[in-house]
Image (cartoon, rainbow, N blue to C red):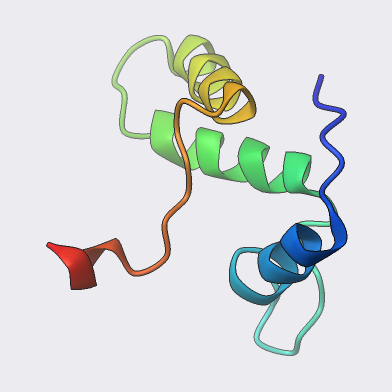
Amino acid sequence: MNDLKLQTPSQDIWEAKYQLKTSKGEIVDRTIDDNYKRVAKKLASVETEMQDYWEFEFYKAMVDGAIVMIENVHKHM
């Protein structure tokens, strides 16, 4: 669904801060779309009903820019 192509500086930031890697450094999120899908699934996992629906809604919201990932949000609260 997502054809998002990041500019080089944005790609570098995503790779450094948000791209999931194992403790051995192996890449889990190959694309930003993989990242969005993983995060949407995790967000939807707390819903007691209609998890598939909410997973898709969270995913769409990230693709549309309505939800953005913020590193270390707790430091700003």
